[in-house]
Length: 303
Image (cartoon, rainbow, N blue to C red; front, side, top):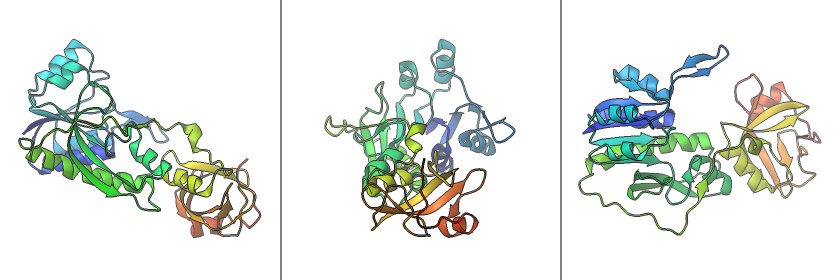
């Protein structure tokens, strides 16, 4: 099938690789332009662009798709289908209508739950036990289109957003290949009006750990924001990212270390911090972290 692929991050790159391996003709790859990154702030291609170039595929990264010129250039590719995964630009109606068989989106939730920008993080942060992938026919609304294919998967009790992201990326890649193979026989199912939730973009202010909250909520927030942007607290005045946590029995003043192995009291209960990252350093498991920065019982975190 002749495809235009539209995506930017690692989540989308997984799907692009699968489509190429499946033998589809990829007429062009649309992605966000290179952004400054690293210490030198040199422009760095997004994962999808880097993969497309390795595969020898033509890459386009317009700043907008609203101009008549950009829309004409897209239509001239004569795609049967556009596959969209975390692209980063709104598709105007002329773009949505250009492919002969429409635009299909790979969305990382079980729609209509968690429409919007951060479905993986929000599912973990509120304590969902299941999520999945939907292959959706795109329309003008925000993730409102009918669903062609859905694949569910449980969320592990200590799973981080990073680990779940990687699993869903692989599941999404498998699902889009299957959806294109079965496109003639799949029946679009309109999303029900009941159960709609919106996964708003993560605000950096949400990353500050509030130790007065219940332990279950604190642990979910830590896992839901791991690895990015990373929930954080201060330990001995140093800002430290917390990247893994589980709930444990315990009680004390919120933010107080209950032992020397990073059990920390919350407003109700306690959490055990299992993975951390100091500023300017890589992530570490708790045991390795404590060898370089001991946190004795009684230490007050936060502030």
